[in-house]
Every structure is written in C-alpha cells, then in structure tokens.
Image (cartoon, rainbow, N blue to C red; front, side):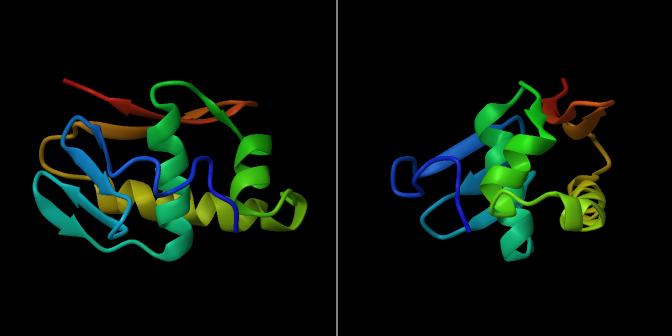
Amino acid sequence: MTYFIEASTVDYIKVNSLELFTHSRQVSLNKQPIYVTGLEYSLLLLLMQKSPAVVTKREIANCIFDGILAGNKSSLFTHISNLRRKLKSEIEQVVIQSIRGQGYCLIGSN
C-alpha cells in the first residue's frame, strides 16, 4: 500500500476538529478517538493532506489501491461511506464531499 507522503515526515495533521497522528496512526474528532481500518486511515490521510483540494479517483487508485481502481470502485464507495459515518458528529465540522466526475475532498466547515 502506498501513501501520499512518508508517514515519518509529519507527526500530526489537523482539519478543524479532526486530528490524525501519523506515528501512532490514531484519529480523533472533537478530542474523541475514532477507530478506522487501515484502508480508511490511508484514505483519510490522503484527503487531509490535500484538503481542501479535490483528490481525484485516479489519485486515490494510485495511492491506496496500487493503481487499480476498476475492481475497487465499490470498495472505495464503501470506505468513503464508512468514513462519513464515523466523522459525523453533532457539530459537523468536517465533511467528505463528492465532486461529481472528479473525486472527493475533505472540507472543514465553521
């Protein structure tokens, strides 16, 4: 599995109340830990690194699915859906937005 940047380059990424700690591979939202799978972590890392820019499906395929998206489209949709559910809070400060025909972006809202 390939990551967008080396995990050791950055210790911590934050988008609003969403925090990702690269050395421990932990994620928290509003200071509460969130359990994510390895693939969800990789996807979230990529989205947070590029936020608020759009991450194309091709970029996701290259970074997460070893360049092969064709057989992994349903898997990608499932992981995005799972991440959205896990990131949902009473105060929505972080949203994974679908950009039709392009990809996804992680947006921090105020």
